[in-house]
Length: 65
Image 1 (cartoon, helix red, strand yellow):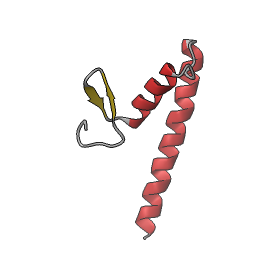
Image 2 (tube, rainbow, N blue to C red):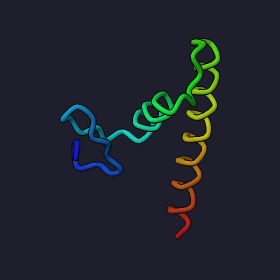
Image 3 (tube, one colour):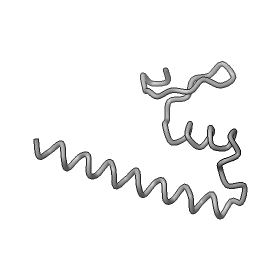
Image 4 (tube, rainbow, N blue to C red):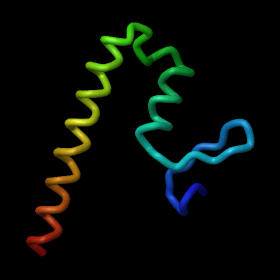
């Protein structure tokens, strides 16, 4: 595990532990990631906004407990 993080992905004898980076890598391997750089930028922006909203909501919910 890289930095003790999970999920982790092993590729070429190296372990990667950032979930968004490994998701993009897997999407590229599967042919699901946009080839066009501008479309990829838009897709990444959407994923990043959703991730930020999820993290903000999770933080707020944890503070209510």
